[in-house]
Amino acid sequence: MRILLFCENRYAIDILNPLQEYVTDNNLPHEVMWYIHKPKISTFEYASKVRWTNSIQEAYDFSPEAVFVPGNIVPYYLPGVKIQVFHGYAAEKKDHWIIRRYFDTYFTQGPYFTSHFKALSEEYGDFEVVETGWPKQDWIKRNLHTYDAERQRLLDSTGRKRIILYAPTFSPKLTSLPLEGMKERLGELAEHNDALVVMKFHPLTRKEWADEYRAWAESKDNVIFVNQGENITKYQLMSDVLISDTSSTVYEFLLLSRPVVTVRTIAKDIYWEDTDTPDGLEEAYGRAMNDPEAIARRQWIVDNYDPYLDGHVCERMLNAAADYIRRHGVPNKRRLNLWRKYTSVKTFGFVKKK
Image (cartoon, helix red, strand yellow):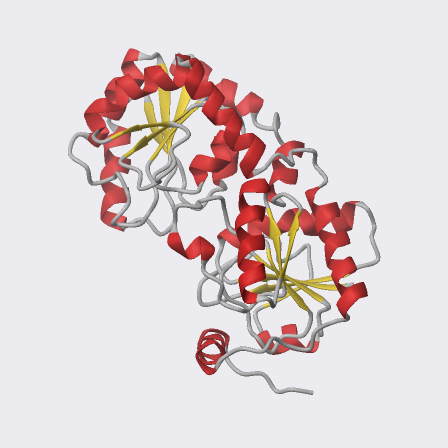
């Protein structure tokens, strides 16, 4: 197959790279091209290693047979089966369930998502659903212990016994960053539990908030602020506990079967510990670490959100894409209403068709 890995946003790179690695490592006969959307992605870390383009015209001329997309939109005029692979597990966010008609098939992470999207598929009648797991989990499987030595160096250098990762969302309406007492309670939590707090913020976090927390971390010996551009999964694998709010990183961390505490989450169904205010962090942390019911709720997330931690997600995805093409052929484009077409062209521009 000719495969286009479509990246509108930076987060898409880490999600799609396992597909590239699977093709390369197994010497598969697929042709792979990356589309990197320059207005939102200034640098591409794999630029010297893979075939890629900033040009939507070149992506069109490549004439892909399968287009993998971890975002909400893809140009309707691109040829190939358009495959939604999702950018996370945050089911409480309303836009997770919006059907925008851009996709021919949805590759879902686990039974919870499959059941919902199959119901939507029956309602809309113009896309299929296949349960494959999430490609980033293949990378996690391979790298589960890659950062063990770096974790130990951090603990040894600070004299601490465990790592607490603070990874809030960037959304001004949902983030815990500006809440009164948030920094102070994090510091106390670290001190009382012999822990190091590692703060990893989303690249889109407001600069004034990031600067404030960075300066605060520099005054502490049990708090560090890491580069916002780094891969958060690395720090998830290094950490024992996650503190967050309303972010898809909550589910990614739960899938490691590790404790999570959120502050003022908007999630309706909560399978971790939540507190309305930073003052409740200490108590929620204790429950997350020791309560058998909290452990059971975490396991429910693993079983239902994404049980495919076997390292074969990319294999299933490529097989499912090939199966779609065998049954339906290679679609030339998607039929959309004028608004969706306009949105697509406004975002990615026109192409000169062959």
